[in-house]
Image 1 (spheres, rainbow, N blue to C red):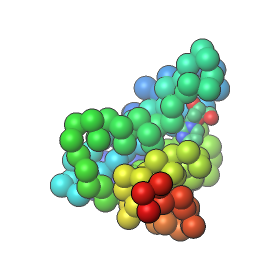
Image 2 (image 1 turned 30 degrees about the vertical axis):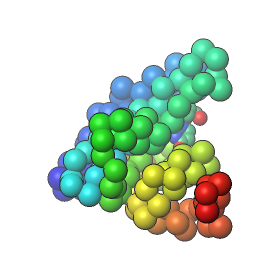
Image 3 (image 1 turned 90 degrees about the vertical axis):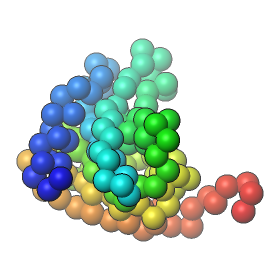
Image 4 (image 1 turned 60 degrees about the vertical axis):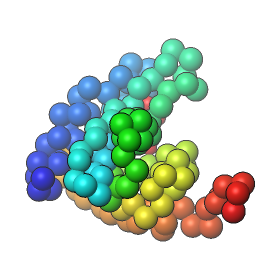
Length: 129
Ligand code: THU
């Protein structure tokens, strides 16, 4: 999949976001090490705090399907600039995909990228560490 195809997939996926409360639509495309693409949208609840972000939906879908190794995650939101993932998503990504690359697109095509490790320095390593 080339970048243009991923960009179009992010746009199409974002249309499916269930964001009736915030009206802020987010999509994610998670790419496994074996090159599978798993999409996610934000899904909001009438009890607002139960809302889940697009990044975690994509990750949980993938984990639930048995994928364990991830190369990168793409994110798109309604913002006119690339939108980095929230702190909660950074932590959960760190738990399951510490070496992942994060690529952010605005829907007008601006792009930014970072390693998750750089987005979450001195991260909580878990109680077993
Ligand atoms: N949201 C995401 O999907 N990903 C993020 O990284 C930040 C926020 C969603 C949650 C909620 O549905 C809406 O954006 C507004 O916060």
